[in-house]
Amino acid sequence: MAAQASAKKAPQAAEKEDPSVPKWYAPDGSPIHVTLPDGRRCIIGIEPRPIPPAFYRAAQRAGAFADSMPTKAQMRGPEVPPGADPLGRVRLIEGMVRKAYQDTSGSEEFENAFTPNGVPDIKWLSAKLGFQITASERDLAWAVVSKEPDEPVED
Image: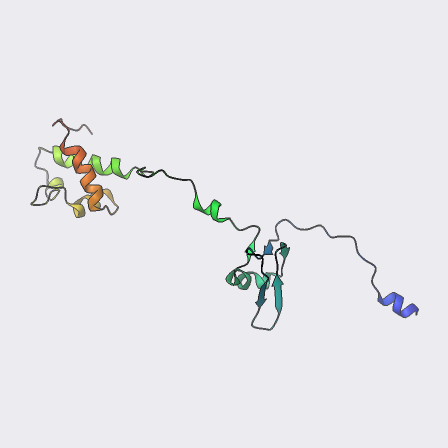
């Protein structure tokens, strides 16, 4: 009898949880069954709980979320109103179109700035600006610049 009593372990005090260990949960409420190639299994339910690190990748592939993962709302970032130009592209494109349009020096820098149709060349603008622009961006910039009075740009 004494052997059986010693074989039973006394309940231990609740261990403090490490906040750096992610707790995994099933986002849609149905349990997620994760099995590793070596046969070990883990079931992830609604209640967030830690799982062994060996299961992290497989759990994520199976659709489980960790409490340390960003939510969709956090990943979305700030809302940008339609028509806004958060990177200032329009201003940069307009500036380069303006410089080319108002150039009177005949500089080689602006030699291929316009197409035979008289509109700014997209390839030339993209090369000068260092990023790809679209025809609609070029057209917006050209509409603004072509309506401005002919005053030289100061660098």
